[in-house]
Length: 86
Image 1 (spheres, one colour):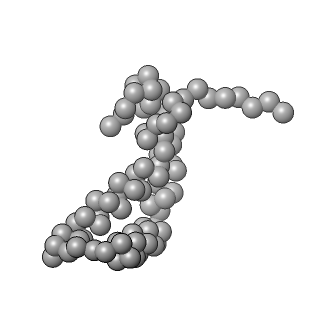
Image 2: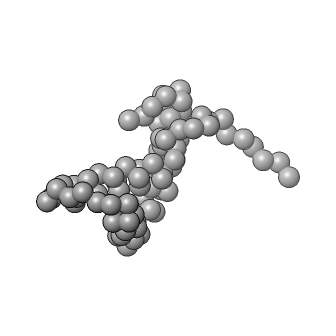
């Protein structure tokens, strides 16, 4: 069996959709916890992260859209010669 390798950067956030998920989670959690300003202990923070993850899982098409964007991400990364695309 022959497998053709696609040359790409080994650690590229542009090609790793989970980076978008983490970024969105952090942004939304920061917004929610600012109003009103709250200090969370470790258990409360963990519960908030898990709740946000479940919320994202229920958003129609969110993860599909990330996967569907891979062709465009690869093209942009190639055009940037492996550099950042954002």
